[in-house]
Amino acid sequence: MAKAGTGTGKSLASVIPSLSYAIRTGGESKGPVVVSTATKALQGQYYKKDLPFMAQHFNPHKGRDGFSHAILKGKKNYLCLDRLASPAGPVPIEIIKKLQDLPSEHEGDVAELGLARPHETALTTSSDDCPGPNECLYNVARPDNSPSCYYERAKLRAGKADVMVVNHALLAMHVKIMAATEGSIALLPLPEAIVLDECHKFLGYMQNAIGWSLTRNRLFRWANACLDGPDLERFKGLVKDLFSQVILFDKQDKDRQQIVERDTLCNNQILISMLEMVSDALDFWSDEATDKRDTESRRNLRKTANMLADLEVAVEPDNGDNFWVELDKQDNKILNYRPSETKTAEFLSEHMWPMAPTILLSATTPTPKSLGLPNHTDEFEADSPFDYKRNSRLYISGLDGSAPFDRMERELWEQRRYNEMFRLVASSDGRALLLFTSWVDLNKAYDYLNPKLDGKVTVLKQDKENESERDKLARLFKQDETSVLFGTESFFEGIDVPGKSLQLVVISKLPFPAMIDNTRGGKLDFGKEMLPEMRKKLVQAAGRLIRNHTDQGLVAVLDSRLSSKAYGRNVLSNISPFNEMTRVRSLADACEYLESLEEGGDDA
Ligand code: SF4
Image 1 (tube, protein in one colour):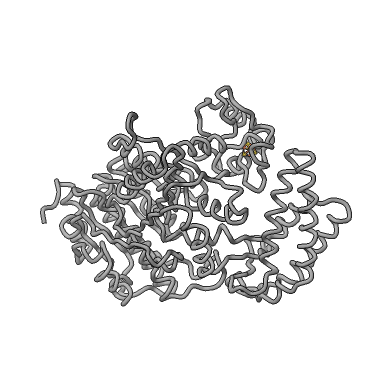
Image 2: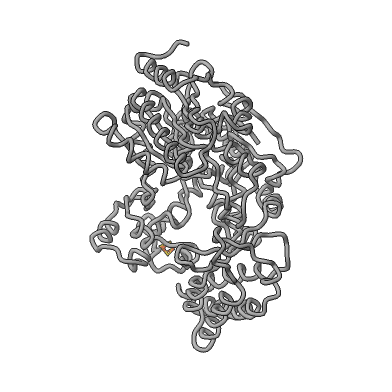
């Protein structure tokens, strides 16, 4: 488990030795080195930047150049040929025609197709709805014998590569399925070694993979597909009873979430009756799938197996896990389940860590124990190679000495923050990454700054409805040296902009996580959970600034709690890079420093 600051070369330091190890130990039948990242942005960075660079300069194989690498995402990231024939929603015919005529070498990654979100959803599928490659009518062999299904082709390419880049969501799902089927079904080939980047996030992905959500709609959809006649009517009746008699919700609850007492679920006769019906349906669809071997039967078998597994967890006696009910935007009830962190760590200890030697990387590593790692785990911490004291400045807005607490103060605080933001960006002549913790804050700042900046610098803004544009925005920001990028939390990490395109990082507010944890129900503990999470995000955001030895610039935190509160002062005096940066005392000094960079650099 290695801890090293952002931009220090963790990818090089972990992939090259892993690959050498895999080739030495794996022989002819060697599996790939699996590199896993939390975000698709970092996944793309490995695939498009880091690995091509390594392959160009490092040759572990005798007799051939470099090494091969491939990327694999989850199924819903690829165009589905079945959906292309019958979309799960309205899609204009000209779009369908264009997609049917994609060049044969196209990878079918929907992030590259520029589709609107509803079209993307209508043309992709999930593991629940895909009957599998052997049963899908559209997955016919191409002239070169490769499958025509885009996902299957990506999987094949990845399986043959020396290094396969995946994301945590897919790796966690692989571990879950391997564990559930005792290794008989796998999403990924057996790895020779694993590199787990941003490892502090993996536990959360594993909890999500094991956890589930049950809605009335999901249960009805399953019943409509897998039952008929009186069984269908009976099951629907049980679902209605479940949501009206068992999954109660006090609509006065402002948090829109309530913990569910375990006894209400595990001894509940309605749930037990539903479980029996799903279990019978599983027997039926197993026989149908064996006899008929058709797409529909295989699909229903898979859906029924998933449903059974989820209901079985709900009726298990108390095991310390989290069940809660919440309301969606339309006030529909959702029953959620997440395993506890301790149980997830035990699961990792049993099913993940024995899989292959693993290198865990992070700028802010968790403890080995919290991830269920063995006691003999080696730990390593690398010092930053960058001279933050010389090459960076830190400005903390000290306007009111504390967080605002009433509406008047909040509005005033906003105006001041946006005004400071403008003055900083004007001094740096663009070259700025402006980071926000909410879409509301981002949009307000954009509305204030954009008219003032328009025509002077290129203004780029992240769009909530079009997350797939993120990579394109990052590319444009890098290319246009004097641009400004407005981004939310997905830009706090995984964006690498060395050089003059980024000399100013502005953090609009301290990045505290939401007080309610939507992934497990209930409130977070301020000291034990919210503060560490905020620190991690702050470190990652500041880490965007200095990416090589010659980079220079300023981080501005426009939230005075960083210096007025004890937890903020702790960050400033103990946590890198904040404790290494040179502080500037006023906005005027910050602007002057940024202007000096424009005039050829600062020699202080
Ligand atoms: S196997 Fe068929 S249904 Fe499944 S993703 Fe591929 S094309 Fe779509």
